[in-house]
Image (cartoon, rainbow, N blue to C red; front, side, top):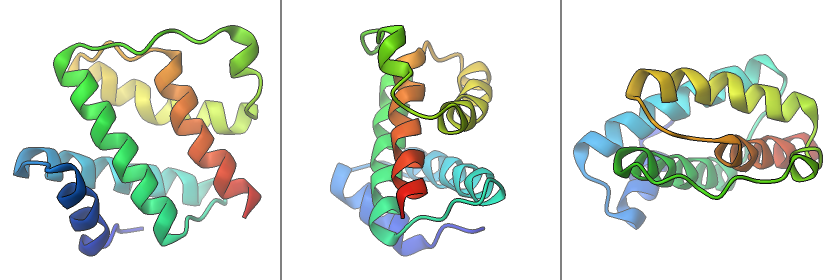
Length: 120
């Protein structure tokens, strides 16, 4: 599944992303949408924008070395294991490749997007 350029443009325009950020977020969105599609999930255009916004913020946190406060285990249990596993499967390779210090909170935030898609 390809991410349309208009969605990426909307996300990056709203957050004043530079060209490098734009390219990374576009690639990550493609990965997310392909993985989610393989899991039977689809997203509305508004959800694409939410995913892109989140990933741009995650990119900036990763680049700056910022880590979100760690969530409690019971908070992680509030999302399905399917959503959390999918989220971790996507984020862990990105974090390893780019040497980001993302934690389970980042995975939880992405999993919430998957939960929303499951409810559609």
